[in-house]
Length: 113
View 1 (cartoon, helix red, strand yellow):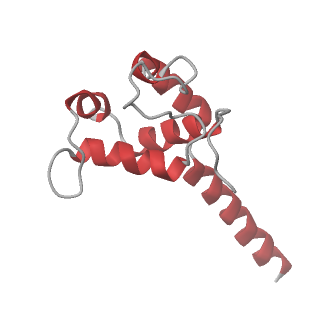
View 2 (tube, rainbow, N blue to C red):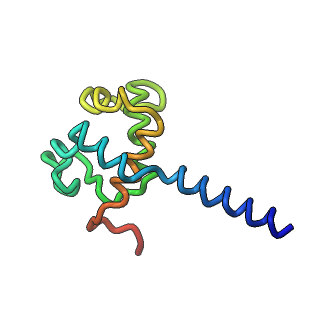
């Protein structure tokens, strides 16, 4: 019984690590696709006030937003030609990795009251 509990705990830990995304790969992808060009070098000072601050955002929110840009205009999608072009080549894993990286960055965003 003890071995079963240990095996289950190991599975949960490895699932959570995979679900959280690979921060190092996310950083490499953010650099490759030059996210900083619009969202700022530290992802907190966008070049346009209508562009969101990305650093410190919740990873699940970021992943959802990227997936909706990839889905495009229409039901359950977002219409933005720049973002659509940026996310088109990304796999679901790439999106989770980028979200994990951006969420891990320091930020002045308030997430708790």
